[in-house]
Image 1 (spheres, each protein chain N blue to C red):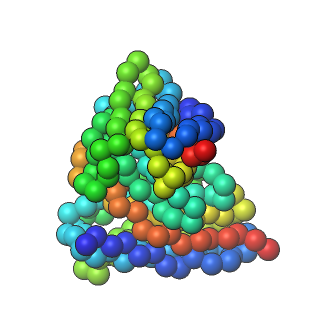
Image 2: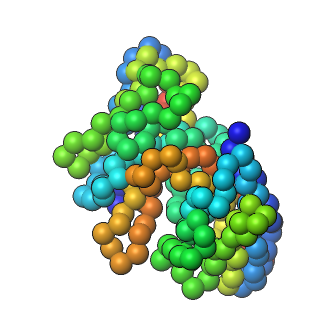
Length: 120
Length: 108
């Protein structure tokens, strides 16, 4: 079955950096674009970044453009998100998500998430 | 911007209607997710009205005149959760995947 397992979250000070990873299995990873979606405590989900199946194109939400970098290693079926210049507003659970089988832009499945807490 | 009512309450066995208002749903339609406490969201309806495998037929969706609706028939206690609508915007300079603020479904 399709599995997405995130790691790398933790407590980090404002202004510091962090790298999240997502290990994918159960599907042809190099055939799918992939995304990161985050959810701040008590808030709705917020799309963060996306990357094409071959890594040739990337997209970012306005709130993270210039600070976050999405990348992938298709040889190891792994998705990454590099977070820089972190602020308290970046505190959230970060989910790795795969587009669903449709072409309408939905996400299915989601990983279990990894919590990033930005605090001094 | 996608607008959802903060909360909807319904008695067991009744029908719950959760709305999502927007001015630009894009060409991909509206998608709906269910999220229970401490869990990741789960897709329950995609492309306005299609259901992923494993989602009960009690969950259905519709989209008309800038308002999408998630309908949950014969509501059960296990349906109590937060529900989010989502669209894929492709008309701007950059593509954007947008979520609504969420609706808390309470089963009385």
